Image (cartoon, rainbow, N blue to C red; front, side, top):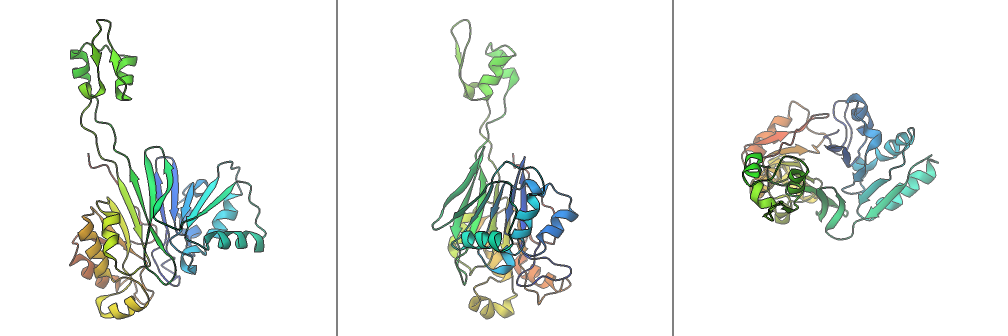
Length: 301
């Protein structure tokens, strides 16, 4: 929704990523301009299930009050979950009080004080892990559980399992007993388990070796690449990463795809290829994210 850091630009909103998985919508950070991108993409954003905040600096949270208020313009009974480090509850409650928000749905705010699974659903979980910034900051990974292997109809028939409800039971992982007393197990007719997908979100942090371990094997890593090599001392002082360091993390983590985010406003769009070139020296598949850019995350098998 926005790839900029520090201050919004006419062509670059502040940091925000919307992840769509089946019927779920998850928002990671909500900087200024998030609503504009959501409306321009005509997404069903009023049904966002959960918001995951990295930290409470303004360029990551100033879009949240508007999103919460506009979500109340439709009938909604499902709760909105908001996760983030300490102070996120105070920010949400103060915003609701000062702005006299009308909210017609439950808002459940949970503060993160240690690495943990913060949100779970059917076939997936979202985990938070620590980063190192000028205030408490966390990264997130969404990881799907392994999927069952493919069902082999020919094998089922050869074992005497007739078409019908018994096939469904085997696909659900249940054993079935045939009329002749033979027991057919799911592994007799199912292929090997297939891997799920993994998405990771990392921004506003010093380079830490632990980040690569957390995001290892991601199908898509969205990672801060705020500065060029020449400004690495400034990046360290402000507890940010360079584009090269983002590339190093992607390489060490053996991710499939990495797109950078949270660019310094000092770089115009014409200058961003400098950051890309430095990241690609470490991880050739590195990409630049842009506002309202869409990434598909296919299954590997």
